[in-house]
Image (cartoon, rainbow, N blue to C red):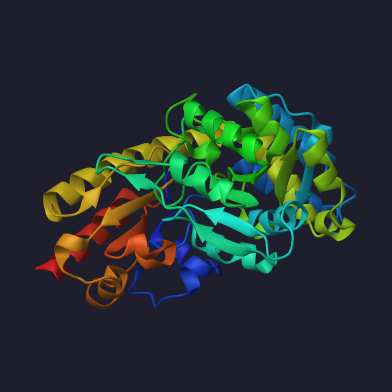
Length: 382
């Protein structure tokens, strides 16, 4: 396989995306989850083909992406997905909101597990629900779902759980046993589980990731999967996500959504996503080689230049959760990093109060940019 190299800074700064337009040119942007690699050839060609055909109208239905995702799930995780159980929409955030609208009554309770992806604090509110936090457990050596805490919350009448699988910002891949235990609790208390699996294709060890719906009948009975190719193939702007249901209960939820939920899918995103799942494997394998090297490089750079920083290499994804408390930069070290080092990092507090003193760093960049970022941070910490 061919290792995929990040594009040079000059080319990246010509991009019009949020990552490259938010800060001045003297800032290294390692905050939002966009990668610096060139687009996968099959994905690029799929978009070009539709444009050349002037095929930029409304989608006729989810079939192309449904079939592509079904094939990808079978090849990658040995997960059997009937294409008829797959629906599409614009992005994973929209998918979550629409699933919650079906699964949770107005003013119902949705559980989230901080530190977690910041929109999780807001998406239940968009669905007219209330948010309850059951933080992850940390023993200093790792993180895990608080199954006992979740059961207490379920018993008190929670209606749904937003599961981040793999978990952003930690890169935590929940074990099959943990997911199975969660599914048993879900069935016992009748609690819906919406599993956001957008980072799943970015798992480093083959076979380590387990789709939530694949673990048991209980998971399929009360669970829905929401995912997209947007993180793994860097196509968030093309706007296409998928939702998967595998029980009569959850199929009815998808079928009950307004027609517009699916109709808002971008036709360019539909074909880009299908191309990613069908033909984007070699490109992704090359990207994973680069990410794996950067994951290790970051550990080496921090040990050498910022030895007080806490870093546990993620099991999935290209986002590093860094403990900067030893630097003495306060609860929001991202602000100090931007001001003193001209490095843009994601503030830990956005992921919940557990993130005080932490930052999230995106290492999907060139080794040179990563080294420069750590060097700047180290110089600012003196």
